[in-house]
Length: 268
Image (cartoon, rainbow, N blue to C red):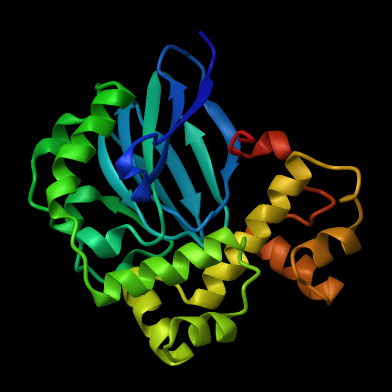
C-alpha cells in the first residue's frame, strides 16, 4: 500500500477551535517518504505519531518524532518532513486563536518548535493513549478533553476577533486599521499576539498572504501567472520584496516552487 494524504474538516460546533484533521499515512508502506515540505499557514498543530516516526528538519534543528503526541507551535518558515516506513501522523490543526482558550502558556516559547504535548502542562494522560487510534477517536478525545477546558474572556475575545479577521482577509487587512476597528492600540494587539499566538499580527498577516499565494500557484488560474500578478495579488507593491519574502517562507522563489514537493491542502 502506498503513502496516502488525507484531510477531514471539522463539521460541528467545535469547528470554531479545530479547523481540520490531516493525515500522513505511511503505515503500510515499507518505503520512507522523503524530500517533502510543509509550509506555515498560521495554525497550530497537535501531531499524533505512530510507527517508526517522522524526521523533521527546520531552521538548523532536526528532530525524530517517535510514537507519541506533540504540540507544534507557529511556524514562520517551511520545514522538511521525512515520513519513515510503517509510520503515520494524524495531525489536529487548530485555529490561531485556539490555544488562548485552553492554555496560559507563553506561545512565543513554541514558535518554530515542536515539543512533546505534555510540555503544555494540560494534565491529562489521555494523549499518551492516542497513537493507534482512528482519526475519529482522536477527534472525539479532543472534544471530550478540550470542551470543558475552553475559557472565554476579554483577552480571548480580542484574540479571536483580531486573528479571525486576518484569516478571513487572507492577511490583506492592514494592522493599523485592524486595531482601530477593534478599539485597541497596535502595541496592545502585538503584545497579546506575541503571548497567545507566538508571532506578531504583522507576521501572521504575512504568513497568510504568502500561503494564499502558494495556493494560487497550486490551483493556478489563468489571470495569476506572472511574478507581478502574484506580488500584487498578495498586496506586495515591490516585486523584489515579494520574492525575498516568498523565498524566506518557502525556501525557493515563486517561479521555482514545485508543488508536488509540498503537502498542500486540498482545494475546498
